[in-house]
Amino acid sequence: MDKEQKYCYVCGEKLTEKQCKDEGVVKYCGHCEEFRFPLYSSAVSMVIFNPKKDKILLIQQYGMKSNILVAGYINKGETPQQALQREIKEEVGLNAVEWNYNDSMYFDKTETLMHNFVVVVDSENLKIKENEVDTAQWFTVKEAVEYIRPNSMAKKFLLKSLKGRDVT
Ligand SMILES: [Zn+2]
Image (cartoon, rainbow, N blue to C red):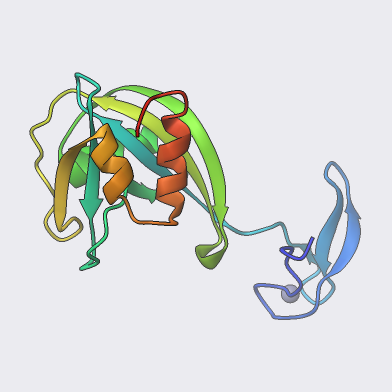
């Protein structure tokens, strides 16, 4: 595996491997004399449907002119399911009423494990958080597939969530 950590994230020393009681062989820093477990972030992203389940919500963020899914990091102590409810409330002012796990992917660039859910919300009336979301808009399912950022992780999640559905 080329993704594993080679250096100690505290002191920078090259890591070795050592038997760790309950975990098997784990990366070890001889300088700090401590085990170094992998470090990465966890986040959620959501394919959000309106109550009638015929429209999907896409947003634009941070000045980027491409449509993506609502997403956010999972806080310490939070489950993905709690994070998705909080993020949807914070970013677009809606309440999630139903959610199902769709898929997960690892995003190398930010060392983030992304969990994607298909979510139904209670209303189409958006209240966007202005400093985080530039625009938020409901699209038909076909439009969402057409207008979501090409070649993105978001598009892969969206297509997976629509498997078996006619989107052509
Ligand atoms: Zn160290």
